[in-house]
Amino acid sequence: MFDTLITGGTAVLPQGCLAADIGINGERITQIGEAGSLAAIGAQRVIDATGQFVIPGGIDPHVHCAWPLMLPGETEMKVSASAAHVSRAALFGGTTTLLDFCVVQPGDSIPDAITRRDKDWVGACHADYAYHLMLQGNVAPHTLAELGDAIRAGHSTVKIFTTDITPSRRGRMIPHGSIWEILKVTAKEGGLAVIHAEDNDLVMHMYEKLMREDRMGFEHMAEVHSSLSEDLSFNRVIRLAENVEHAAIYMMHISAKTGIEAVERSRAKGFPVYGETLQLYLLATQEDYRQPDGQMYHTYPSLKAPEDQASLWAATRSGGVSCIGTDGICCPKNQKTQGVRVDDVTGGNVTVEPRLGLMYTHMVTKRGYSMEEFVALTSTNAARIMGLYPRKGVLAVGSDADIVLLDPTPRILSAATLHESDYTPWEGWEVTAWPSLTMLRGKVMVEGDRFLGDATDGRWLPRRIASDMLRCPAL
Image (tube, rainbow, N blue to C red; front, side):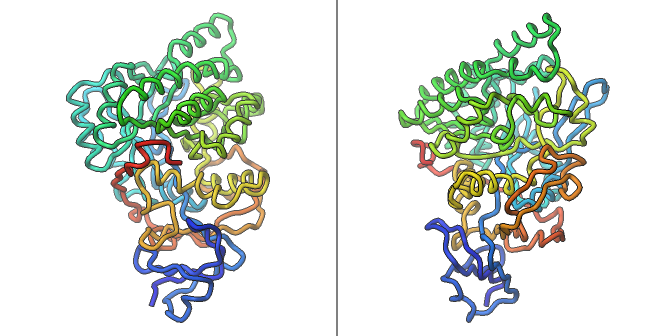
């Protein structure tokens, strides 16, 4: 007998979309059969998924919970919403796994940084989670040794900035010499560098230029965090990585056509570089900065032009983009819109919850993507790249029973009915599907409008990236 049997739905399986029964015992999927074939075995609970898609839980490879926010006019650092808050919203939206960041501060050891970050997550998250280790500045030899230990212990990804982003964040950028040394460690240990790539010299020059010209309004953000900046930095860091044997990299939040072109040139040569974009870049452009409360649409790098957006969409099919994340930073509207200048506007977005609904709408309904493509870009590819597959990101025997029933019934998005914040950039937007049920490791966490989870349900996920993902572009 199964603990739970899901029947009647169209399951998005590795072999395609099929009418299938899915049997679950404990935390794992234990059997998958043709429609109606498992009923005779019996189950303590039978879930009828008729008329719905059955998909693996979403994986957001890029969120920031309990993240420091220095807001203009404030003397004390604020922090964004907690892992408990964001993970609850994520589960309502069908996302069951979150990848956040563990910041290694100057003077920290990596183990100390992990211990500190665990205080924000362990026993305080409804969904499963993992960390990208985030190094900063010049990286000391002893930190490189600790990085190797951390990768072997299951922290398989390391975040690298090629820019300080804003003049007030000096010290975040890692010099290229240190990047080179980090890549040698990740190559040796089977890890992956995840990179925020912008040209720091050009970015800081443009801040100074706009200040001289008295054009500091945030609507000019695309001039600072420009397509040219992405072009210069992507090409430089990719060429560096290509010259480290067995290195692999993941370019975070690609926003420009130039970034896509750099990734696709390298992939064409057989180098294992993977691209991520954000639903924000797929659904908004730099013109949205001029809307009322246009700060709602901002994250770093900036929004770009319509031709950049078109390139991002094309890359979701050509391979230049493998994952769609959010860069989620959840804070109230008054904090998000408090900054009005290019050097003080708050990055990140409250977009974790509506990600699956929005992407289904704009991929499957509006652009004719297959369900397999949709699931790959919102779940499976992230699992494979980040070392979670096949435990996560797939409906398969032995995989965690992270399962979402996606109901293709239209609804209108509203901050009043979402669970992240008091605003959403997508207020009034229609989505053509929404999760009716979300399951994490066999436990129903959300059913309809009811939340059934607990903040102790989430677990840290040790990761090991498969060797085929590191040898060549396997997606």
